[in-house]
Length: 395
Image (tube, rainbow, N blue to C red):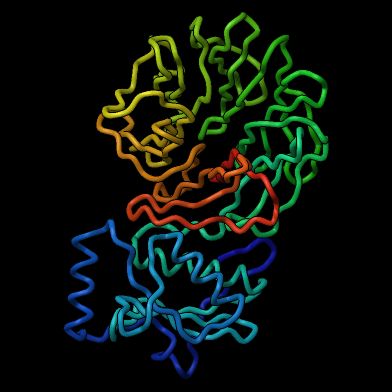
């Protein structure tokens, strides 16, 4: 049984119709289906053709959005390598077929229709791609209103957006803390850019770091033990690390040109950051327990900003400027850069496949989008808020 808050999602109960509801295999596919699957297996850069039938309204819309975010393309049944079928009658009954072969057969109850559809989509994605779905993920982001901004939390698809702050002031760089129970961010609410921590459930907030000068970009380590940040208390903005409560502060870099936007390796042993100490903005990494900084080679591009280390440890996404902002990736140890799509401020989802990022409108306002990295397929997040940026996933 999969828990959803205080509600549950229950698999189909077998009873007398056991053969209908359990996952089963029938040998033999139509030749056309086999050919489609072979092509997909050979070229993972192309969206997987999937059909949806039996669902309507909100449930179908949610399923289509979730599957397209995860590298699928919704097509007619005669063109599909996989068929998603089922019905919603207060509970969601869902099936996944590849030709005549049933890969998934499950029912979901005990939550709102959107939540049930997200849960089913995650199961479908795991069957198709072999990775966990992210449709039930949450994000935190900044929403700007004129000269001020607020921190918001929402479902990954922009629904159920709720403000975390109501200060009417400048805020920046929100990040989730251990167990996604706390939020860390910079705010000017007391007149200076200081670092705050806020309990997500209760809204209780405390000032964590407040030195003279700038106190910026607090980023908790994946193991929940430490906090990286950029402080200018000694002059130039440099990289510091403390325990998760802001104590035992240590300085890691001493760069006159300053550093920015730290991101942790998933093993919590390294921090990648941006520095202009050798000219244009470049990526560096440094061990938390000491040692000198190491440059991360980004072959093919320079002027690299806003890095984010993938949860599987293999890849760093970042932003570069080449006639506009571009999202790129590079192996975590450095190497050849892959340019992805126009955008900036990337944040990896827990599956190390999906990136949420920021696009600019012609009036220089911002909105959030989702990128499936292997296929480069993009879906805009349908937020009703007008100027969203700086997203970070709950992991």
